[in-house]
Length: 269
Image (cartoon, rainbow, N blue to C red; front, top):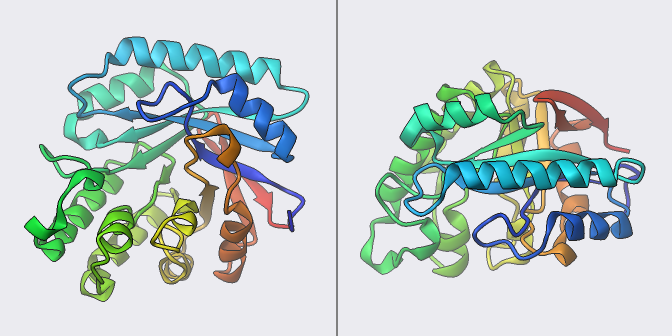
């Protein structure tokens, strides 16, 4: 690791529907890898028809708390959540955030309302520019809701449109909407996530890419978080060094972690 501070603030345990390993195993692997701070941010998709929210939140919160206490001398464990599609049921989202005192909450949009995750769409059946237009409008609405800490993988659909389906996309067509999203984050004192998962997929880039991260800084953005979006214990920390390099190149001297929903600056050094 090029940097002395090694943090990963987007990871999934087996409490996520697509997770694979326990919170304890994630922490054990983090210690082995030399990670200093680990946020466990399991999926809480507010528009899910299958999720028992009370059982999920209670179990995940207790397990992350146990891991936090067990590893406190070796690793800073942050109790987190990736809240997907929060604005589709704001009352439920806000009740969860009120009842469970997380350290860190990622805000995410994985699908348009009443549609499947972008992962599942057959893009031969869709106008990708219309989809992206609606997507960025939805992300802007999420940012205006303003009850999360960091915006996860801003260019999430590109994982599948550009990466998997090999459809080239001219993001400049959405420059006004992307700028509005970044301005809203900046004005609200929220963070932008540099999600490194795309570096190891067909996309071969961070989510979002460097140009957007740099624009966020130019628009007054103060906080960036870096996360691997790992769903396996052995993939923790993947791409974090590149993510930190991107932050540095774009004018950020620190990355941010959150404790009790408050930003803590970690020097990139």
